[in-house]
Length: 412
Ligand code: DSN
Image 1 (cartoon, rainbow, N blue to C red):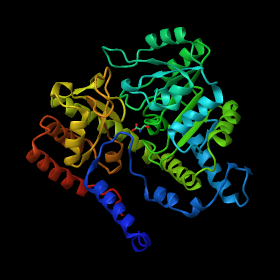
Image 2: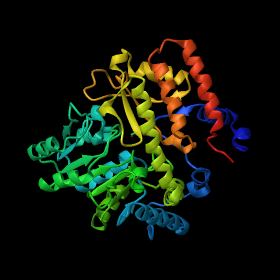
Image 3: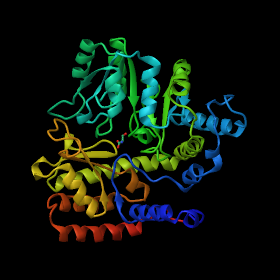
Image 4: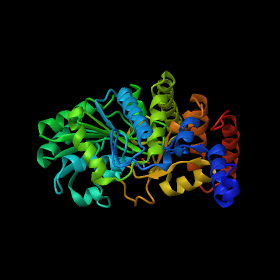
């Protein structure tokens, strides 16, 4: 920040405060992560200075030869990582990746079938407050009320009745394995397309820690900043036959100039993800999540579906008599960052909620392992069982900061 601190000390100070927050606390928001120095460098590079509307070899601006090289590398590395025939790395976000697939293969008013937001789905899967709920007819499936897991029989029944044009699988708060093959089979049986939004579990899918959706379902969309540990952005993968329609839907369909510094940083992230150490990292994310989940349950807390198979877990705080908002606030005071989250059959608003979503990607990036997860689980339990006990919260905060100090976010 040597330039910024001289030219704009106000902003430099804000960034420094955020650096300290990330350094001294524990980031347990399931959709967040810590990128490498190399990704940061690419994001902050002169690649931001260029317009490159179009695609490699067919741009609407001159001087794009090195941007072509960067975008080609990003696409090739992403294809290699997931075994995809086709990739588009231009979507600015996961929602825009989803939008491009819908725009490419659906007409306005067609039926979109997906998981309900309160059951773990995503806003861009058909919520009435998103364009998806306004442009399309939406049919939404829930989890099995007993197991709190996906019930493929019920989903198949609903698909037969609703006859969707697009069946969406993937979630933002589902702690269990998703059977992509089953979803594609259901879609095939009713003549629908199947799209998997793997934003949360992309790193797990790329490394075989969770089954891969690419090559199984028609379209796979993702973000690049969650378990993939790259810059904030989106991407789409599919079989080659779908490529031209998706390319057109992204540009010029819904975006203008691609963010070339982000695409360059995506290329860096995908190369990092191709290394064996990234597989070890993703295995550790899941091991850590399992231990954290067991520790929370051993402390008497209820987890939706009774555990986790992936990087996240969902706490149901109903028995504690507190809301997700109260728990998030109390844990925030203890320097543990989490987010309140709706749980299946939620009775409260999305701003209050009865649950908390907790994930291990960022703390695993810092090198924390099972023993740290046991401590973190016990600290979370201490706070959420007694959210008004300021002395106990202060005590947990001191312990959190001491542990965080041993795991720097950017060790030299
Ligand atoms: N906001 C993301 C998450 O936290 O899961 C999804 O878009």
